Amino acid sequence: MLSDRLSEQLPPPPRPQGGYVPAVRHGDLVVTAGMTPRVDGALTHRGRVGEDVSVEDARSAAAIAVANALSAAVSVLEGAQLERVVHLAVYVNAAEGFEQHTAVADGASARLQELLGEAGAASRAAVGVTSLPGGACVEVVLTCGVAPA
Image (cartoon, rainbow, N blue to C red; front, top):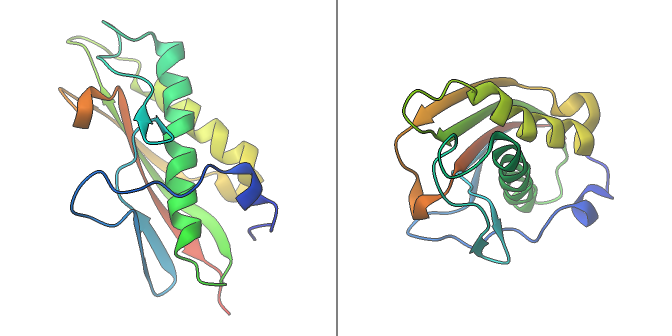
């Protein structure tokens, strides 16, 4: 279950960068919009991983992005408790020939487990793409389970 202290460890819920909502709760699930590595609304890591951005910097960016996604998920719980992360999708703005997608995604996975323990261990997809919004190097999406009342 989500501890009350988790909110203190997360950034404020992100503001939408377009015509969408940051997260939607439907029954016992919460699904977030794609979150990029933004701090106070400013993108921190731009470029293609393996070309402009190192794997280590992309891992850090994934950790920032997943904290934003988790904050968005928590913001729609309306008093309910987050039970666990069910699925994590990590999109990597990858240079041609780049093959270390899972190493980048490990930055997001590690941050989730740091914040949630075993409840942060989730199924995962790490996908290479040719571009992301604003030139971000990574974007993450979370699907979370909400504990029954």
